[in-house]
Image (cartoon, rainbow, N blue to C red; front, side):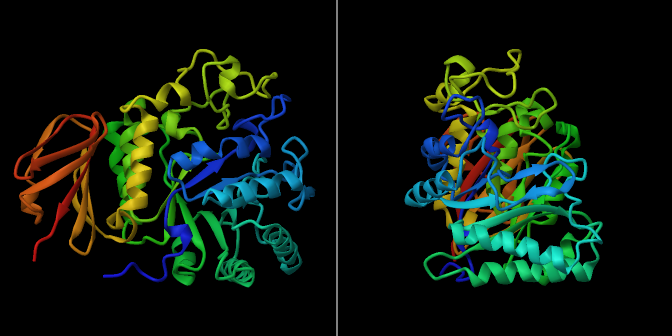
Length: 426
């Protein structure tokens, strides 16, 4: 069977979301900038990402519509020429570029910018802003909003116009996409009205999840499991990084979930090294190496680093095959290369209180993901219709594997995640 023709590039691999001010400073002023992102594209490519989401970088004053200009670039990040250079460099490396145009990212009205006063005139202004950046050369627009304060008819009208503007600027060589991170009660309605035409992103709530409470998180993820035409966001700029939201020992298990569920995983910068939030900020400085300020800047950083936190950085983890960074690289590779993870059907195999398993199957090739948040267990997977033997290819504790295992009585240690490959014989 051939891959589905409808699978656009935005469903074909993971995306990497960057808060520019905290990623990499290129000029020593202490603020991360566009040129800094350009300098670190090799790191993103190494993770097997398909696209990067950058921003917000526009000028604005929190909660003030009159001081918000989505067409501008705040000077601390650079200028439009820097942005064009970044797009060109990223595209040369096979990376697509989306710009985050969420209007009020640090305001008290976060995600409530679009409300019942969002009239036709304001819709036209937003469309003009979209057009500006699409003409600049971005591959897509990313925007976050809450649906609770918007009338359904107005929201449907707005999303249709956003979809149409993306189609208008799309060509065979450069398809464009509008990506909308939805919060609120109308998410399902919107997804049903724009199947595959707008990429909707669902944010999975991880706040202070522990092993015993993970059932709720898995049910959130499983509830979208039948639909591959969505994005899944675990860590994000508003809620924080994964290891700051859950028990530290669950980081790899959540990573495996992100990359094996249907849909497009969106990785928040730094989650691949276990970056921790500090000073009540979900935008800590990225940690690159062992130099002063972890290689983020040669100047004085815009936010004071917390010296009490774990100092794991990219350089330290790069050569460790069992590090979190290596695990993300391996997952990114499998997501890119295995058709089962890109196109495969989804089936829940186990959904217990402390352990879960599901399959992704494409033609005769299948992937089984197993996650154990409790004590060591032994499971007979043949009772769920799986073959007697499978190939263990990835373990959260042991890294890459190539081991044939018996599925009649498979032992899964405590706090372990497995990825297994199996074949279905006619």
